[in-house]
Image (cartoon, rainbow, N blue to C red; front, side):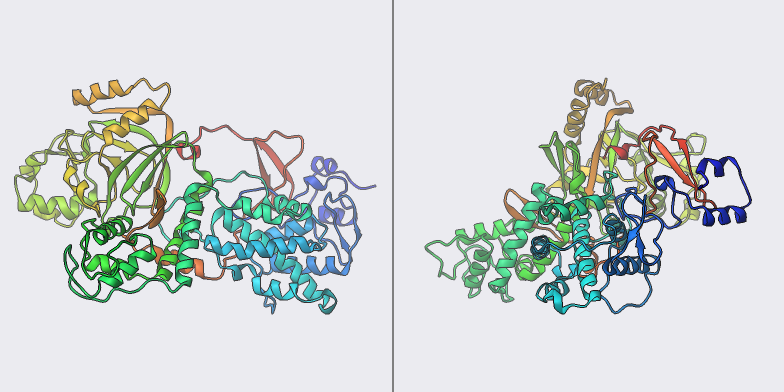
Amino acid sequence: MPLSRSFLLSNPCPMGILLVLLLLFPLTGCTEEFIPSQPVSSPQDGSISTSPPTAPPGMTFPENGSAVIPATPEQLLIQQRLEQLYFDPSAPTDQEPLYTTAYLLDLYRKNQFAPLWSSQANINQLIAAIIAGADEGFIPDDYHLKTISHYHNTPSDQMSLAQQVEYDLLLSDALVLLGQHKRYGKVDPSLVDEKQNLETTTSGASPVNMYLNAIKSGTVRGLLDQLSPHHLAYTALKDALRRYKQIAGQGGWPQIPPGPTLKPGMHDSRISALRRRLSVTGDYRASGHGSSNRYNDALIAAVKAFQKRHHLEADGVAGKSTIAAMNITAEERIKQIRVNLERTRWIIHDMPSSNLIVDIAGFMLQYFHNNELVWTSKVMVGKPYHQTPIFRSAITYIVLNPTWTITPDIIKNETIPSIIKDPGFLSRQRLRILDREGNQINPNSIAWNQYLGRYFPYTLRQDSGRESALGLIKFLFPNPYHVYLHDTPSKSLFGRTRRVFSHGCIRVQNPLELGRLILANDPGNPTSPEKMNQIISSGKTTTVILKQPLPIYLMYLTTNVTSGKVMFKPDLYNRDSSILAALNAAPSPLKLTTQVPEVKGKPESQQVRINKNVHLVQIKEQVEEPAHAQDTL
């Protein structure tokens, strides 16, 4: 009679004896409680799932693990291949690589390691979805299209057993890989920009059942279509990609030859080429003067439309920068759209109904409330050597009449040189020097030259006021980069098209309006918009805590669609190239995460700890902790 698990737990014995007992008297009837030494995991989704112990040759385990049944040659070969890839992924092989081994091991285990792709309808759906993936900027051959198509056109009786197994595994790998890429993106954002925190949230459910159910129910294409983002920002970019591919397929647009700046009223032989160029992208509409070499009003309007779409000064003058933007090929614009489709996939599934989006490359801020765009504003962002980072967080509090504590880097590199050069700099900027106890220090007692380019042991703080560097309001959200939104006295700079003036923070053109809107949409907050105005007038530095943190996304989108127009922006920080290279590279194997099974009869809030020596599950209740602001995302 087999020894029960309760007997082993209540009667401890030396490890050697325990191992002998386990070999002689295998545990039965409690497979769902036993943790194998090699957990099977699903990348990126944090889900929980494990594989039962490996079956001996000639045997395999059904889903519930309660009995063994004879295995077919296909089952044995599938199980052998997947286990080899999982436990020894570096082993040499002459077969096409699989990128989702952890998923596949669990997927086929749930099907008793039997082949999954007996339905030609399912295969046709998958092939169609892979081809359609190009409309979202994916490369179909990443998903084994050539090899799958070859096998698809080969009669099954002309394929060896090994080829039939490879065909089945490649189909499953393509399904899972394409599905995960649609849902989370192909490129890991942390690998292409060190200042990012764009990890997507997940439901916690294993995606393996989702893929298995799609195969069994014949809804493969439907599932993959569902996993693509359906947000308007994404679908509009897809339409733009399709349009620019059509333009490229028709030969693109003509290049404008070099020459002097084209100004209104001029006659120039390049005018016809300029007109054809703008006609291709719909900026110029044909008129009765389509053959003239004169730079007329219709062409001026078309140039202005083009300049607005490409974030250039909309003056209607076709100068060097405008002509250079026109001569960027359709193929290059296609690459730019693909990069931004990928950026959109990173976050678009998890957008809450109310949020702020800072478009760094577009110098704009958008405030969405209950899924409606309620407010926009121009912003200034970091200079190329003080780049505004990409991340997401949540605004947790607002400071009215803020003081400004200058950061050590700015003190060392900018403030101290200014003080040495101009003794009146401190008083003019209303800067006070404070020691560690908060006592004010006489600036004349400091030998400033000794701190040139070195650490300054005091705090430099600017008093609050309309003319302070932070203006009358700032918005704080947790992040490791010390970045926040704030007011600025330099309002004239918002008239510039390319607004890169800050040290990394975001300056907002009309921040008091934003503050009033946020407080009006923060139920239960005792600081009403009227109360905020009173505090501002008092001049007192006041912190207002939000009842509901407001999610904020700092995004870097060099292409998007606004009011049906495709907008192309300068790549301020040269970030597009690394994403494009990763998109064009071979897929990376999806990451593994440790997984454990759900323990029946226990509450959901539990932690599972595995003793590495005995592999027994121990449960302890999880202490409830307050959610961080970022958890609201």
